[in-house]
Amino acid sequence: MKNELLSISRDLGIEDRFIFTGVVPYDRVPVYINASDVCAAPFILARNEKIGLSPLKLYEYMACGKPVVAGSISGVADAIEASKGGLSVPPENPEALAEAISNLLDNQDLRAGMGLRGLVYVTENYSWYNVAKQVERVCKSGLKG
Image (cartoon, rainbow, N blue to C red; front, side, top):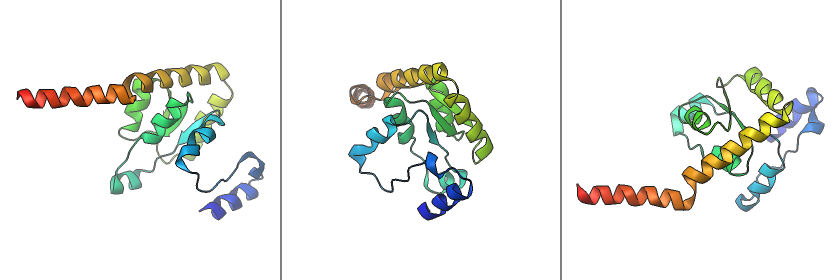
């Protein structure tokens, strides 16, 4: 897929706008996220239906204070709406994805606001401490039943 994307970017004359890194070790992922102004997660419906979805990348992007543009599929759109940390677009619609990314790139205040709201949302709802508290509540309620 990397070669195909390289070829497409060359054909469009935009190869200088991308860095194709290949596989990045997990502990280095935040470095790459933090080098971005906007993070995109163009989820694919068929893949989601076949193998399921974990919106972990959304939370990683938000934890780095980055606004997110993502395909509006179940779970993802809910997280974006709840956090106010990005924009959801129709899935598998490259024009809508590009327009949303462009809008964020053109508006630093909007990017900063969404990035901050996403960071606050993830910190308040998905920190290890808060997740442990949620698990504890579920376990205690199960013991009472």
